[in-house]
Image (cartoon, rainbow, N blue to C red; front, side, top):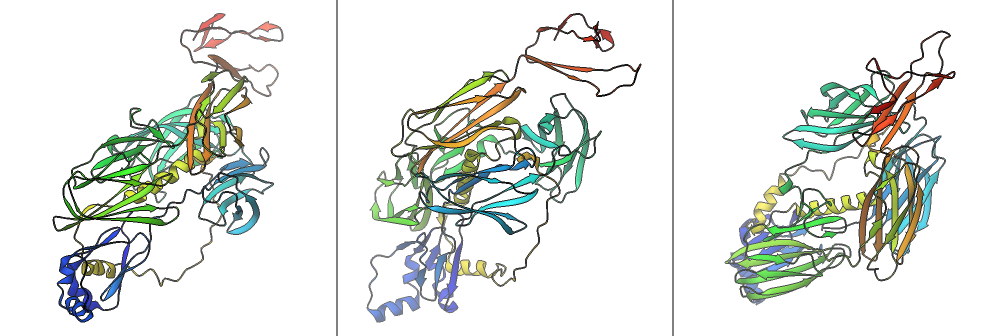
Length: 612
């Protein structure tokens, strides 16, 4: 909740005269006794015969109403707002392979209302669909027969927007993805996966590291194994964000680039600070830097800890009611609970608060903002906390963790504690190599992360900024209100960011859930690892469940056979054998025109039983 206050002066002399008598914080305006001592203010009050009720006043700016004072007013330009409207879709499809784009929209504040989804190409509207959201605000739709090109998909009634691409051919498109990322002091290491038309690319490839301006800062040549995997290592020189350009040496047409993830910071600072007033709560994605500690709420794992000693702190932030505790005596306290959805607030005013006094403040779902402004020891204090009510239900997925390629598997989706009212589940089973882009649970947690980061960007504690100081800071800001807007043409993107390319999707859809739902899937015959993503939506609440199915046999092999050979030429057949279990023995045999073949390994013949 970064401070974005604006002073609208009507009389600069009065502003300079009252000086620091009015202190502007991040969410409050504090009227101190120095304000009443200003000669002009004292004279006006004596003429009006007005006697102020106390020597201090606290005004909350979260309502959006300006605070008026002699000589001007103060207004919060951008009140904190939470918008959980999420739009996700397939990021790239091949025109000849899949002629439809699947899109999913979730908006908990537009249940049972009609919305319009628009497809744009070069900022021109090419497709428009109007549908109704269900009882929990979920919508699934498909777009068919789109010509090749780059598109934007947006919600006409909101700010939700995403993009996708339709590609004419996949044979010249190289798909590159990155996982198993580690970054320490600028040294970036990761595993690179290369594919073309869902088949692994092996052999020599060139990898170039690009900085933000597209300048090559490092280059290396890698050797991808038969599974299309290679380990990369770079020092992240230049300014971020960085991109990795990959090109196959034997076929220069196969070239792509992928954006590298942002370098990670230390684990103890990687969480999202939810409450910074005395007691800290950090939210991590499940299993990231938390050693599996803390409860999982709506896809995040919460870890609590003490951040420092302040006159006010918050206990039990993960509860239906946040408890504000006064660690010492407080002369004047104002607590404002704010609903970022409805833009409504409730104000509590307290005077002469004793040390140890507790104030339970109910918060709205899925989370509410609680701000506190106080006069303590003659100084102005303010702070905030996010109250996170626990989810009213949970979601579980039962599925085999290991399976054979081509096997039929069954998924059981259930809620041990069904929520009240309607519950709709979004389920996707997709190949794991291309990451979580396009999954609704990923987009939802990213939206929550961005909301917390905006609210967390707030220094709190003692405030002493007077209006005159705030006005001087404002005068130094560049004037952006009178800049002329120019239309810019955005052409086609020549390269596909294949980190967002579409993987094979076995299942993607929505269904109502009352107790348990069974979904049967036939796994493809190729070895792969499949991610299971599920989100159960209820009224103002949701639960997330994830899993993985490793469809990898203990031993598999494939042959690279030349399509044509000349008469009398030597026939060379490459046999690739991969084993996931060391020490396994396999039989290698083959015939050509009825004659047995001899298999060589490093120039030496293999026996009938080869140990892997």
